[in-house]
Image (cartoon, rainbow, N blue to C red; front, side):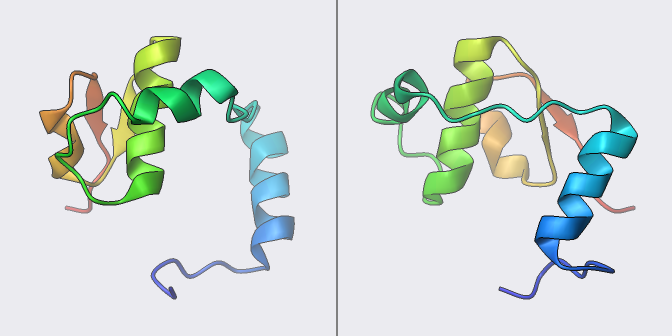
Length: 82
C-alpha cells in the first residue's frame, strides 16, 4: 500500500528489528481467527480486527495509531504521530 517507508525490504528489516528489540512474534492461532467472528463490526479492516481478537484473548494491550480500535473492549495504547 506504500504507507510505510522502510530502509530495507520488510523481510530483512522486520527480522532485524525483532532481534534488536527482543520482540517475540505472536503467531495467529485458530482461536484468534475464530474470535474475530464474535467481534462487533466497529472496524472494517479484517487484519485490525484480528489484532483486536489476539489482544483480547491473550490479555495484551494493543499499540495502535487507529483510534477506532479503542471502541473495542481492549486496552489500547496510542502510538500516533504528534
